[in-house]
Image (tube, rainbow, N blue to C red):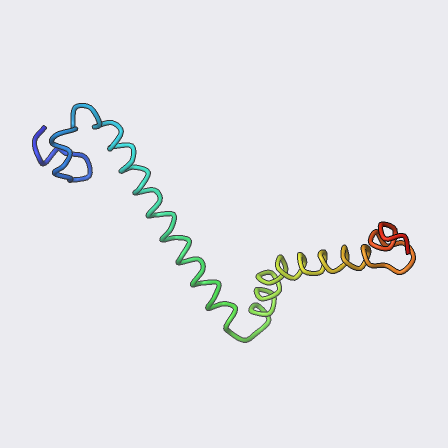
Length: 98
């Protein structure tokens, strides 16, 4: 292979071009797709951060949607612990025989 035909423009590919050529090409394709995905994720996160930072009704809804998953999990864990430590029906009291 000529250096201009090497996968991803690497010069190391000269030695392994016949054996690893298709593998390197696939890896380069995946790396390109991953770069696009990471770039769009960072741009989306920046957009959400700017939206949450603003004032107004849209930003209030964005904050609620943004923080709802973390708040929901905290509330669920608190409710489970309340059930475990309940005075009459709690699992901890039943296990301890109180």
